[in-house]
Length: 373
Image (cartoon, rainbow, N blue to C red):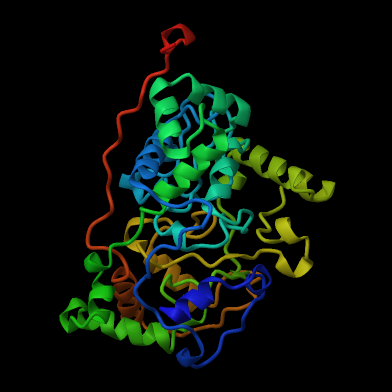
């Protein structure tokens, strides 16, 4: 537990470093059962806050057109993502990256594929206000909340303010998201760690040896989250959508433009450079954050652009040493049986059943005349 805590609280500078692959799994934090969710001192949890956050997570009023709530891109029955390669865009637009699952996002200390937010509280407004995501204006979203009597009452109860403030909405949503986590009692691997030798089949046990040895997965996917939370360029191929669909191409050019890329790059379509868009360091081109391997069974497709559809595709990609431009992976030379064993182990890091949740009943907007005086 202490080892994971020290690891989780690493500095941003450490996160931006790229650790080379090494031969021994002993050099890395071992896989472990997730500890209790870390909670920031300035946003403590309460049942009332979580319940409010759940409603706000589903509420489209926290978007530009009233329909793009958080759940639009993070659906429980789709692994708390979209189930597709590229996330939905705000109506009339198109997103350019895969919608990462919200499952276990409470354990990340940098959000988004390029680490552009430092907390769940910071992630929520970035998504709700993003031009190809929620496209909402903070002051307008706040006013929408203030015209909902039930929200006025709930915000006063939770935060002690006379009226809802939009920053408090992000706090409530973040509190709710900290409850969307893996239940270790439902995860074969965690049950195995707890002493149930029968929790893993023979194939998964062989896969675990490969994970920690020949396949080298532990080099980057280590610790309780099965992610070192660092950034790497593995040569993930461009998604086909950006060569086949005009709206995707418009999005990519606009993203490159607004992220400060040279004219030659955005006019020619360019590529998603990931971490480079944040740091502007040439060595960071093509780097994306190591995703957690927990709940893979329910969160396909994979990679920052959803270009790999299945776990078998992912294992094949790593087996051949990544893609063009890869700067960290090596050829593995896995046999067909070893690949199947590795997939079996990866699946054992997921709960037996997906984490589902019923949609809450949302309160109604009222006119000002209907408010109690």
